Length: 235
Image: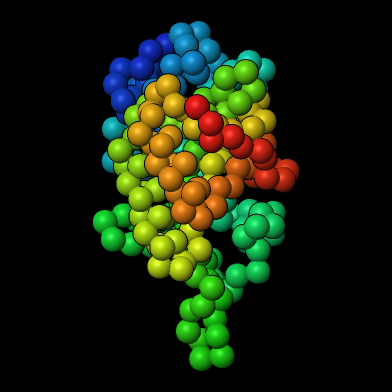
């Protein structure tokens, strides 16, 4: 992605707006990651902005990548499911290979699950249905990725939906995509959100699968790399 603009992070004005410095001028940029990200959003940190092609948007840029401990961290959490879909289509996720249908966003109950997979029988009816909920992870502690970095009622409800699907005999997966290259394994963030962590344990006990992968990030592209990583659900 060659059109990125290099800047210096200065301040988080609110949940969705970051103040950055470009050539000595303070500019407001959209912050597409609603997590706390306190360990990333530090005054003086180098960031890379993605220009907007929407003339009606209030901010000209979105914060796309941020430097942290020698690595580029992807901040566009909304793109996590697209990264996973691309990886599935390119057969980079062996646990989710061989499906005829790969779609984004499927409404189930009161939630929209990020990815829907299925095969087709001889009458073109869907079989082997699978639902995958993707969570973007940027918080790293001692090389261990943790989610969430702030309490997430929405995330807990997604897990409950996956549990219900699994009880109906439908394959269900929660996919943690580590978008900080320094993360080499995963655990739930018991300290920040014990309720989500307990629900994740419940989901796993009920048969919901957990997959953990990471991205390789450069100024040109963000993509899923490597094989599935280890995880621990213990407190």
